[in-house]
Length: 408
Image (cartoon, rainbow, N blue to C red; front, side):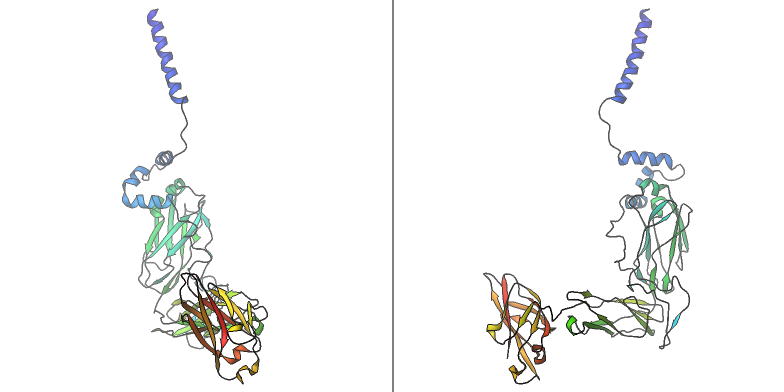
């Protein structure tokens, strides 16, 4: 009897201790360790997470999958990835120089493609090359960047099948984080595409890589009017010169227009303050596409000036506090200089603060005005009459102002 009672009490205490251990205290939140445990059970024929973390290469890929690039790192419509012509349409454009240019999309930019998130095998994200413009034989790394909604668990369980058009390795397949990236090279110039199928589903199309042949160097893009006057038509014209290549220059694409032999591009501004910067790509007949940076132009309007000068000399000066970025209209009498030929001086005098600098640097009507304390720039007399608008941009340093006026 006593033995039975003792055995029963022992069993009851054991059961109670089990419930106390499982039911008392706080519940820890879901952690990375919990996720690792679940992945280890799921991946029966692949590496477990613990085994992956013990392998430096696998660990690096796993951490990259767990911490994907931010949205700022993923190429978008403002990225520098080139639009590669000829991907969606056939045929070639023959130009008078004898070169052949692939058809070019008529989008608003000749240098960028929109990399939107795609989905394959139930996993969404983007796949992109780095670099986006490469040379023959250069290594190009293709990467899949998962959407933030996709978990690391899904990535580790997924199978990735890559296909590289023209790549040194035509295809590559793998599972988990180690298959998120693949590096290949190319020995043929032109646009090369890549596709990625996840879990055997319909492949997604990656942003293309442009592989250049014979280099194009020395190109310079300039604009005739950095501050076109809307009141006078508001037209600015860009031009490109100096391009050199061992192949033949076959065309220029301006702001998304089809590539053609023209070396100039004009834009008409509609309002004061409007800024425009054309994109430019130069082509040769060795499938090279070379982006060239062009300067921006910002419109002014003589009908809406920031300041106006109607008389000459220091008494008619305009005083500015700090740096200057302004439109000034000149309405001096035509007879002030006794004629309209020649030049006159636009002058600026520094008004130093307690610790101000005497240095001045900038432009007036696109003419350099640089020096110390008192500086002048020669501008045409015709720029001082009939309501001509000029752009004044001056840096006068810290704690300083400047007074500018027209002089002899």
